[in-house]
Image 1 (tube, rainbow, N blue to C red):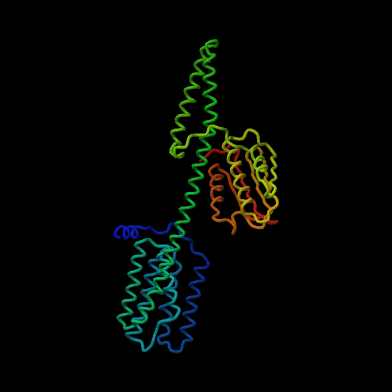
Image 2: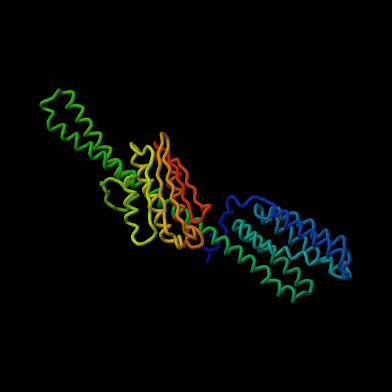
Length: 380
């Protein structure tokens, strides 16, 4: 129990909360307008100016509801408590307006956006408010008010946990994509370095009949290639979880046509390769292939009533573009997608290589994936 309390108090504030926008100003305007109208039109209200001020002034602190929720809660409950004290001590009737219902937002905000200590201090303000209500003899109001204020707090904590969980899942997807890219980088380079080592060994075998300089050069090539291969295997060994490296060549742009033939009985997959696609770096070829594979897979799974999937790969002097478009009724990452994390991984892969990836509905229906990678991309 003690550890749970410590963990709760150590919880930091939510980083980078949403910036203030028109909705915050609209909320302030609604609360202030409601207070003014109620203060003017309500017949049983005394000290109308005091009642309006006790609502209007703290209402403006709602502009900091996400960035400083504890301060907003403290000010809101302080003014609300003052209103109840004035009612009990000096007024003949209530000076509390119905517009003070906005305080229900305050426990939600402090649990949603504040730190653990902010939430604990906020609970103290809420309990203090209930204590004041009990002292004034309003037992029924205090009992009824408990769930009305604690329920928004529980809702705020639930929304915070949900957002944190989704953020962790997104980070895990990005991490897996980085690991996958690191594996492909390792396997691609390892394949070529292994070939260099083999050629160097062959050079040593015939070096006796050639100049000494050639012998020395071949020996250096073998040593450097073997050392590089060993260092790379050690460097990315932690990413493999014990998996042995696959030294087979990685799939590239030319292999995308096989994806069309493997589509089976689903929508027809048309592949078109154009432009300058020769001499691409292995990492770029592998990325284009993986992006095309993921896009086709998602279209086959989620594009309802699709009859055709178009895959276009074009290259020029400084970049390679991949465009995958389907003619289905639903997008692969829309309502029909269980998570949409595939798009996160694809975007991460393109970004790591210095490229971009855009995804969205096509103008004529269906969904379009458009990725652009630099020809000489290197992992960042």
